[in-house]
Amino acid sequence: MTEPLDELLRRNARVQDQELRATGLVDSMDATWLEARAEAGAGAPAVPRRSHRRGRVAAAAALVVVAVGAGGAPAFADWVGLHTGSYDTGPKREHNPSTPDRELWRMSSPELAPHLQAWERDYPLAPGHSLDPLIDDYSRAENSQMTAAGFRDSVFFYSECTWVDYWVTADRAGRTTARREATQGLADTVAKLDSPARINLDQPGRMFLVALVGAARAGDAGPLERERRINCDWQFR
Image (cartoon, rainbow, N blue to C red; front, side, top):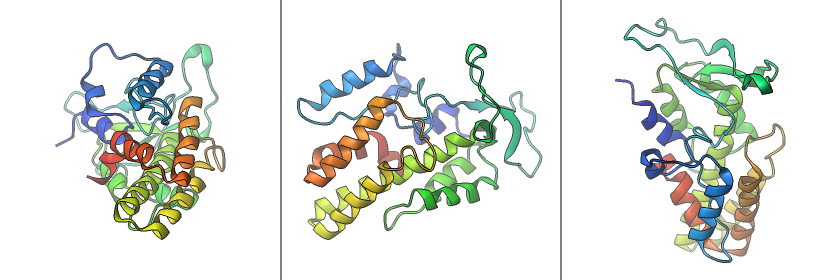
């Protein structure tokens, strides 16, 4: 049975469960950023929590997840092709060109996995992790689509979360060598926010990731523990 769309988004977005249930969600990233700063306390890097209206999948705030095939009829043939030939070009007043990264791809297509695995070469995962949980989540997302750029960004954020998890696990176990390895892996991933492709993340989110690397280098576990709990826990359940 197809999972409800909100459940899919909960599992694949950098949000907390209560945000999907809350009423009167604010759309301003500034508001969620300020709220997170207040919760984190003075002197600690705040964890920006993405409202599901602003960044449902992998914090890709300008990207679209589309549910299709309603009405009880089969949405696709037995083979679900990846490409739709449709593009997310944004609102009419900001019409963007139909570039390959804006094409809407089908989440449940078997053709998706090789693309995710190719992006893993750009955004390596921490030891002991694989893309299998992410691939499995998408394979169950029948009748849903996202832009190619959104899928790429999801691999970036998945990579970031694996290094956060690796750092936290090593820190709890007192394994300093593994923690140094995790710090370098996290720094290498964050350094790729703009290359080989620009990750769709707003300035507060970028500032937070840079601060997270600083916390890892300083051995400050608090920000990494919070990042794992708020934005990464779904990855490792």
